[in-house]
Image 1 (cartoon, rainbow, N blue to C red):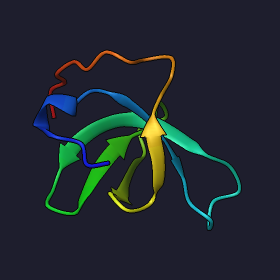
Image 2 (image 1 turned 90 degrees about the horizontal axis):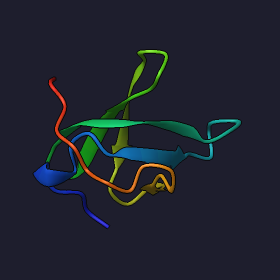
Image 3 (image 1 turned 90 degrees about the vertical axis):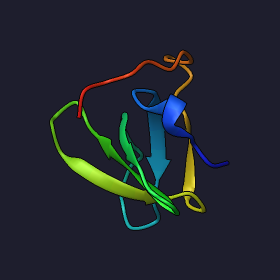
Image 4 (image 1 turned 180 degrees about the vertical axis):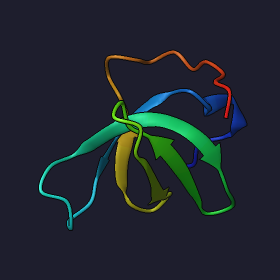
Length: 67
């Protein structure tokens, strides 16, 4: 699943085997093979399209955010 520019602002859940628990955040930037997302605490993380992630079930509607 590859997000597009229209998905900026959508909430996602990212599961990485290195993390002890899933992280959630809002898509802030989309690059050619990965995207960045910002958590509610303000931390920014990167996620490859091929990693284990999904759109959050509690926020199914995309919306634009200022970056």
